[in-house]
Amino acid sequence: MGLTTVDAIAFVAFLSAVIGISLYASRDEDTSEDYFLAGRSLTWWLIGFSLIASNISTEHFIGMAGSGFGSAGMAIASYEWIAALSLVIVAFWVLPLFLRLGIFTMPEFLEHRYGNPARTIMAIYLMAAYVGVAIAGVLYSGALGLQTIFGLDLLPGIWLIGILAGVYTVYGGLKAVVWSDLLQGSALLVGGCVVTVLGLSEVGGLQAFLAANEDKLHMVLPADDPELPWTIFLLGIWIPNMFYWGFNQFITQRTLGARSLAAGQRGIIFAAGLKLIIPFIIV
Image 1 (cartoon, rainbow, N blue to C red):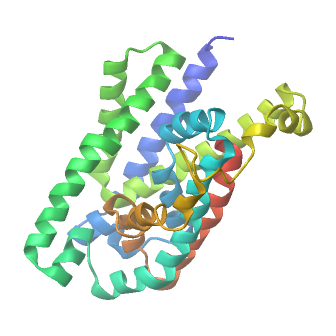
Image 2: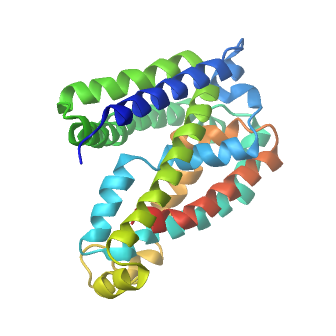
Image 3: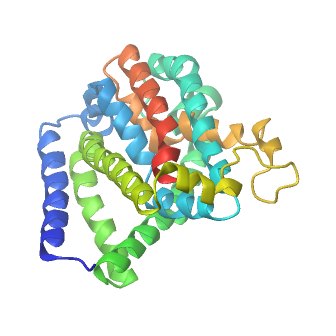
């Protein structure tokens, strides 16, 4: 079944609502703290949804789902389980330090500890990593989705996604971003649940699915597995997870805008809870 006019209208309406609500929510910004940290006024539920929405994207729905269908199977969900534990550590041992220092960015934290050269190095590294790796991958996979659904060529799709996201981000700052995250994250989670239910219905129910995919439902793979050996759980997987959830500007910015330490901690724990259900609606 192809895309109908109703589908196209719904897509455009949702996109317009995301941009409109985000810009409206961020209309009163007078200081740099308002712009970069939403005036340190973010509630726990906004923080939680924003953390998850910032994390999940087309790279999850396309990349992680593809890995789950491949040789990794459900073991690919290990990244999500470890992420939930990492978030708990960040909430109670890392966030209090950040809020006590009153920092705006992660490079600024390094400046407090090691001086200005460390701040400069990390800022350059993060910019290169975001532009060359993270953003590039998300833009490409998003454009791939637009190509599949609407028949739009990859390059125009990449430009379209980049421009639309850039409009409300540059204009509205962090507050616009977290409100767009709330709307888009909710849509992703609800949509993922709907697709899961419909998918199980198509294959004959949960029992039929489990019987047909028994070989892919193992959470722990052998130590000699080329993709996800169980040994990475001892140390290796924790290093990128702690960086990503605790010291990654792209993620941590949300928690730095919390109205209080308690709000920030509740938001992170809420995100950790959502992380536990992600594998069931994506993988």
